[in-house]
Every structure is written in structure tokens, then in C-alpha cells.
Image (cartoon, rainbow, N blue to C red; front, top):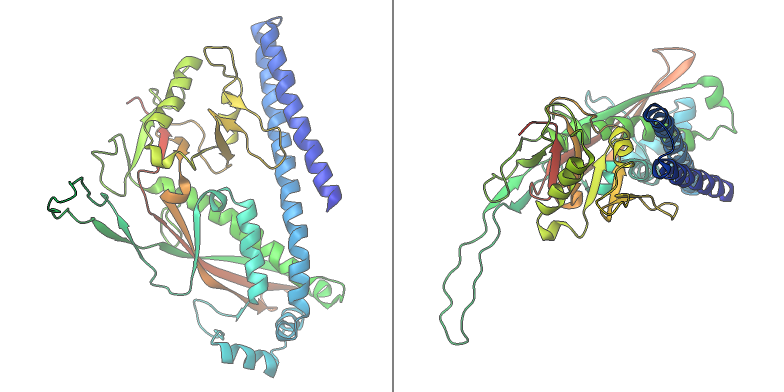
Length: 405
């Protein structure tokens, strides 16, 4: 674990050094335009490479932390029968009784066949997914036990007023409440292991199940949380209606966009780009600024890294502490590869309080069904979980969209 931390810190320092070296070159004004362009491309490639290395190391650190928990779960008497089923396919009477008593036997159903993964193991899958998922880190995450979960949200705000000490208290208008329900979907992963591996007593079945399922779920979820269409999957934050109406004139459930002024890209001048990102901040209400973040992909990050303000200061501030995000205008920046790049009507960046804006809902329980017949000598494990999402405050996040107006 200590070696992983040291390696991650070394890569983090390399990234900061690369940024500073590039900025020195920009400041020197000794190179031609062609040389600067070539240097810029090399710099962006180097930053992307270091970003990927750091992300991989962070994933390895998270996995290492999960090992102890997983190992303890695997040796518990009540869980041993489950992992014996994973290895051998034997459904012992003890396994049947354990799940019969808990109400979690679902073998034979079409939608959720298999046995429930032990709670400690399913919890680690969710923890790892949260550690490695940008949207799960930024947004509110709930675990629920009912398929019919809903929330009431105040779409206009409760009215209030001022009165004198002895003045009558006139009745104020009540809040306008709307019920919001998560759009749910079933994420599944077909995980394969050879029977030789399963028969090997040193093969860590619990660790393999957690890391394989987490990676498969996370990649699908992250894309869905950003742009999912809501068809058998969560509805993505940016799949909601996005208009140019401001907060005072926009209906609940619609996000506001700030147009780039160009049909398919950022403006060509740095000052206009700066104005756009400032507009995103100033169009956001004060109550949403305390926990505000930026969200964008690496290509947009690469463009912003080079920009200076009117005082010749870089607007992008690289973090000097490992594990802490970079900042843009003093607000933390989150990077997701699933955010769009420049293009017609593309939502290329967002700003605001994602925790208030968007809620991810996990239905308790992860299930796995063992299948040694479909592709021998490999054994397939059909593993599934229910997850959904909902927009809970459409004023909390602003979107930068490639549009002329």
C-alpha cells in the first residue's frame, strides 16, 4: 500500500512539473507559432498520459483498501457457503436456509436470477465504484430497499415575510411540491473465470468477484449518469431538457445552458472563453456556490490550461496536494471521459452543486447466477444490480453548450 501511495505521489509531482515547464515555455516567447503548436500538442498528450497513470494508481489503492474487508467477509461462516457455490456450483442446504430465512432467494426468476452477494462484498463493490466514479463522488447517492422510492421536492420555495411584534401574521403561500421518482435500470455484467482458476485454492474468489463486477458496473453507470436516455438505464443529468431560460423563468426539471457563441466549439479568443466560464459562475445562485464543482473532459481541460487572465495569471490552478483536485476560478475541477468534446449542441462543461442537482439511487442487493454451461471450460457469472437516478434541483447546475445563442 505504501509503495502505491509513493508511486501515485511521484506521478502527481510529474504532472505538476509538466504544467510548470509548459507555462515557462509559454511565458518565454522565444519559439515560433509552429514550435509552440507542436509543444502544445506534446504537452496535452503528456498530461493525458499522466492523468491516466494517476487514475490507475488511485484505483489500485482503492482495491488494496478493500482487500481486508473482502477477506474477512469470505471467511465468515455465513458467507462460506456462498463462496463455495461460486467455486463449485454446489448449493448446500446451509446456503438455501440462509437465504430462505432472509428472503433473498431469487433463483428461477427471469429478472434477477441467482443468489444475493453477501452484504459486505456488495458494499465493497459500491465503495469501489464510488471511489472510481466521478458522478458518484459529486452527486448524492442513496441506497433504498423499495422499488417504488420517490421524493417530494419544493419547485418554487416556501413563501415568507416580515411582520411587527404585534401585527397579524398573514398566511403565506405554501410550497409547491412535486414528486420525483428515480428512473431505474438493471446493470448486469457477464464475468468469466476458468474452472482451473476456481479450483485453485489460492485463487481469491471474493477479490476477483468484487473487482470484476465493480469495473463492469462503473463503466456502464458513469456513461448513463451523464448522458443515459432513461431506457432500461438511469436518465443522465444532461439528458434532461436544457434551455437558455434563466432561473426565474424556467420550469422545474429543465437545466439552463450558457451558449458558447459558436455552433460547435469554444470561442476562438481566450478572453471570450474566460467570459463564458465567469458567466457560468455568476448565473448560479449563491446557495449553490459553497459546494460547486466544474465538470468537463480532458480535451476541454487541455484548452483551459493555457489561458491567462487580464493580469497575466493562469486561470487553471494545479493542485499541489496529492488527492486534491485542480481548481478553476477557485472551484474544484472534476474530469470525466464521458463528458462530450466540442461539437454541435454538445454540453461540454457544467458548473454547480451536483449533490443538490442529481441523486443516484442504488437498490439494495447485488445478485449473481453461476453458469458453467454456456462457454466451457469457462464459468460465466451473470451479476446484476438495480440502479437509478433523478434530477432533484434543476437550478443547482449550469451547462456550457456549443450553440450560437
